[in-house]
Each structure stands twice: as C-alpha cells, then as structure tokens.
Amino acid sequence: KNITVKFESTGMDEAITLPVLVKQNVYLIFKEAVNNIYKYADATAVVIRLTLKDKQIHLEVEDNGGGFTGGVTMGGNGMKNMRMRAESLGGKFDVKSGQGVTIRIVIPIRD
Image (cartoon, rainbow, N blue to C red):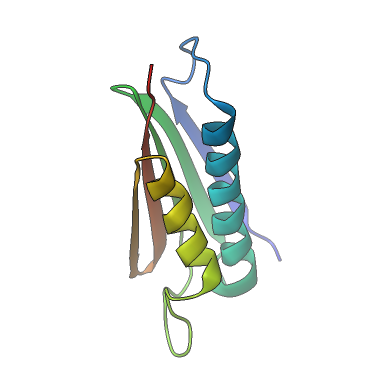
C-alpha cells in the first residue's frame, strides 16, 4: 500500500518525564490506530498530530479512507482496547467517522 504520512508535533520540546505506563499505552494506542488504517481504511493519506498542552498529551490520527461502512464497526477488540487504555490513564478516547476516520485521545500528565 502507498500511504502518505504527515506528522505534526507541538509543544513536545518541553522537558517532561512521562511514567512508563503512559508511554507504553500511548504507543500501543498509536500502533493500533495505524494498524487499523493499514488493514481496513483504504486510505491514501494519514495525518498524525502529537501535542503537549496544558499538562495533557493529545494524540490525533486521521485518515482519508472510507470511514466505517458495511461490516466494519467500532466494536472490534482494537477499538475497545484503545478506549480502555486511554481511560485507564484517566484520559478520553473519541472516534469520528465520515470522510475517513479520526481517532483522538487526551491523556493527563500527573505530577
């Protein structure tokens, strides 16, 4: 597959130390989102945004694929696991489907 990937990062130049569980779970959410795009989305472009703002990590993964259609649902184990991982860190998980799919997570950084 030929998928163009654009990565945008804002505020990540601040010196912060993240707990291992936060790093691990944000990475696994990111990995699952990208894997889903590759396997199911029929996308040609992906935008990944990683932002540190107001003591929160914001991760947004957006594709230009077909969105959720037909037998594809948000009820698969991958989506459930992403939601569970975000919520286990006190964060939020949001999915929007239309012209493509956008996955957003917000994870608080605790002192």
